[in-house]
Image 1 (spheres, one colour):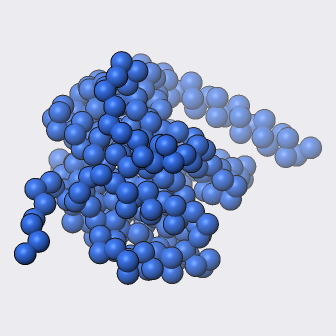
Image 2 (cartoon, one colour):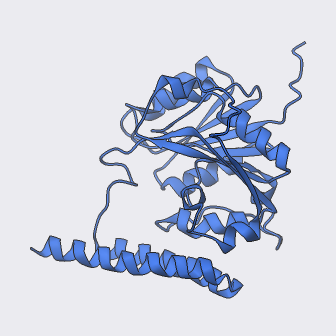
Length: 286
């Protein structure tokens, strides 16, 4: 009989949409993980470019992979679908055109255990798809710092010193329990039918945790590419409205909590966005 792994199961959820040129590299980086007990949920969000077939082929090769096909509904719905099917005690999100270091899950899992935290987050590298990062080792040197804080401490400085680690969902490992119980008898899920869902949900997830630990080690490789939802900046009336609305709703959360330092940080960001959108609109009119 196969010996049962003593480590808890970690579910890695990957929304997949129109990424046939990149999804293979992403999945390969997941399969290289040094952490031994994984399930990989590839949620094909209605791809028409063959991405879904690539996912199916990987699932045939490796029993840790499950593929879920659904109609195109956006990344928020795809992540929620993954959460609804996940069996792991811990959850991580990876975008399908990105890659993670081989020790990504292992490092974050150990940080959660070391500091008794519910969320661990790492730094990331932008547009540096490098095999040396794929095969990173757990490092113990003075250049890598670890910072642990309570959820209140994290929220009070929101958009401040640790801004890089905050809003994005994909550089983190979460205890699944904080997503399955919001303290009011409900569950936490990504807002569906809204753009900028990360702006709407990241602080809510942190608020439901007790401790968060950050590491400065770069373990996630983030790819910017033309045509992706994050780089395709459309200055349309609807996009501007949704962006600013999401920011206002987030600011209201901090105002109600009287976290004034964070509220001021977000207010400055909101004003800068107003100016930026205004300049983009003027340029487009010329």
